Amino acid sequence: MKQQYDQILVTPKPFVKWAGGKRQLISTLDQNLPESFGTYYEPFLGGGALLFHILTKKNSQKCSVSDLNFDLVLAYTVIRDRPDALIISLKNHEKNYQTDSDSYYYSIRQSNPRNEIEKTSRLIFLNRTCYNGLYRVNRKGKFNVPLGKYTKPNIVNEENIRSVSHILQSSKISINCRDFEVVLSDAKKGDLIYFDPPYQPVSTTANFTSYTNKNFTYDDLKRLAELCFELDSKGCNVLLSNSDSNEVADIFSSNPWNVTKIETNRSINSNSKKRTGHFELLIKNY
Image (cartoon, rainbow, N blue to C red; front, side, top):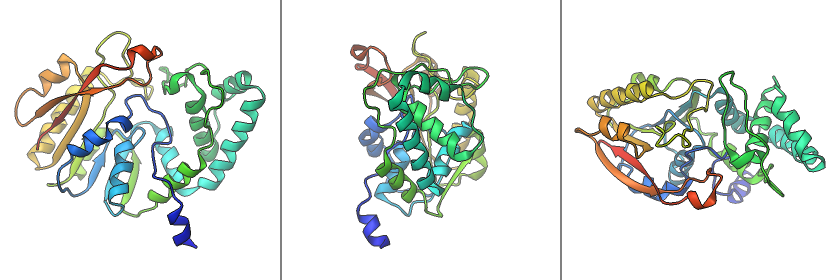
């Protein structure tokens, strides 16, 4: 029975739309991975596009992933451990949303469920129905994005939830809620650490650093850069994505960093004409 179930699984993909998500850049990232590496670390997990790509290619890969957003980390563990209950909850959201999308959306946005299933269900529901799928919280940690204009949002992507759940079952995968600096005490020579932090803003309207109630500041960027140098000195493979900004370019302008400018789109820009023609930096020490 299990073998039949494995055969119908779809390729796992991010279950949330995340600002700075890497699905569109997977082929570029794949070309820039080391030929071989030990444990894979991703301290800014977000939507997990590269994680799912790596696990699809090699499901026995040892991975240690984390994020400082507690609700997001909880969502990964709930999907891994209790997909059936989550799907039932999402179907209930879908039913109520179809009845009165406006009032139901704002009632859920105001809610603060304590049950882990309902917390995760709420996050996915809001992510699927909010404006541009942008995850943003205010200084009090409250989700504050308005309702989006969708005719039939895909609130219950049952196949993908089950596929993600299945691939995360491996005992070689650990998921934690913690600050990115903790990786220094865990990573060893030959391991791969991929950093995809909230980007340094390139304009006043391109600032997406509010994934938690604490913004990712320039001081955090400097802290991250120092960590990257320390990981390099340990013999780790370091790969970093960030915006094509002067601050980032200056910090990583010396050896051992190889900096490549790559073209990307901005899928969360409200103006579709402004989603193309953007660049970001890919930085690595190998």
